[in-house]
Length: 402
Ligand SMILES: [Fe+2]
Image (cartoon, rainbow, N blue to C red; front, top):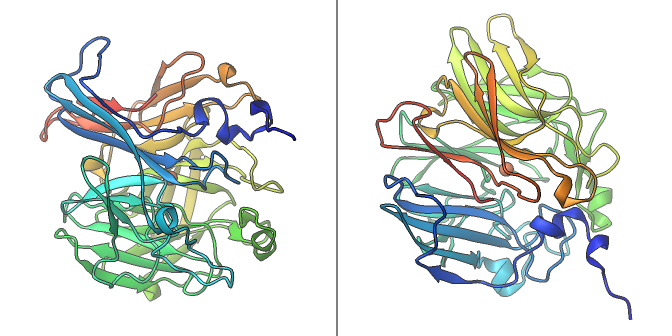
């Protein structure tokens, strides 16, 4: 009988990335230092946590929510719970043996957001799964049967209208559909957007007046899928384009701008500046080229889309490899001065050799500062929380599980 030794596991199942075995509830947590008394509410994160202990890729595996409830300087509870969607409870996969897609199944392991009074656990292959403030699963959410595609894990709340903009992509036609939930949570827009192929479109951006799609060369690969491997890979022939659509427009209104091939999981923010759109992203010069499980580094990069001249200029803003870039969500689609990102540096196989930090960018001065967490400590995505509703940009806290 052979046994898998920990060092033989892929990195996404080892060390700080190893799945957590138990669901727990802990109350009245001890605090080192002091919690800002203004921070009141539940802070949640979502992530893959395979119940079996193994998964074929770091993007797969059952979703697990972790939540901590803060109230006037106290940490009232921590709990973690699996997202109990249909894949978890019934074992059904979102793609069946015949290749048919069932968006009501899925592992909902990527993000968790709140909109119109509902908390939604998200994965880009599937419908949302609604959960409660204590992390218990309510059930699959298809907006009264109106949603017919998957729901990105990175919808964009518009601070001007209260809408939630999102899209769904898939490997069969239509490849891309854009949607809007109104401020009350009703699905009010669904528009098919024409794209040349089935790319992995993880995220997008909005401004006050536009929606920006990133059609980048990580393309569905039928051969990988039939081998049971992660079915998306880098393509040298697909090219790379940004699509700019006026809000309220449709596929015919999208202007496509060619850019140098690259991949972006996550933009930081986008905004209008005269006849240009500024889009800051964490950009991978290449990703999964010849190795769908390979690791690459991303760098904060600015695309300036010149709508009059019809071209995009590109400038790397910093040389530290980062992911999960974010800005103050109250400024989504509007000019932000500050941004935040997690630096998770992979240096070989030893967890202890990683230099992990929270990085803060002052995009006005070009200043970059970092808080290093020390050896063996890995931060998750940092989320900015304003001290009060009307506090200025950067007046508040960045929250992360470490
Ligand atoms: Fe993501």
